[in-house]
Amino acid sequence: MAIPAPRSLMTAEGLLELPDDGYRYELVDGYLVRMTPAGGEHGVVTARVGKIAEYFAAGTRLVWIVEPATRRVHVYRSLHGVQVLEEDGELTGGDVLPGFRCAVKRLFPA
Image 1 (cartoon, rainbow, N blue to C red):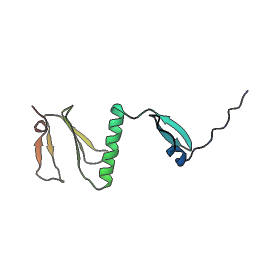
Image 2 (image 1 turned 90 degrees about the vertical axis):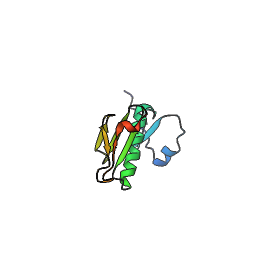
Image 3 (image 1 turned 30 degrees about the vertical axis):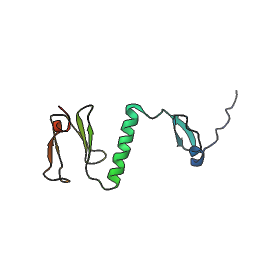
Image 4 (image 1 turned 45 degrees about the vertical axis):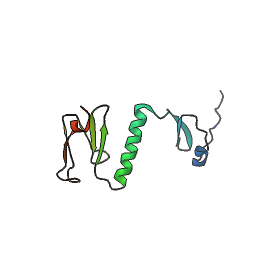
């Protein structure tokens, strides 16, 4: 029975030196793991969550993501607290913008 050769560990520097081949790579316990290419719906959602996390880390208390294609607004009061408003809903500013109110349908062309 053949014994597989041990895989060598990679450093963060080695990861940064890899050529761009369209895939994402992660280091897991020193081993290189190839991930699926970023893009599509998953890539969009991942990028959005990352940006929202940056906003909240900087002290932002309210984030609105307006999606013209679906005619929806995603309201984040925290990274894990999201409310999805449909076209018949009402966008409010809560305690961040007291008194602000806007019908979601007003955000989209008729």
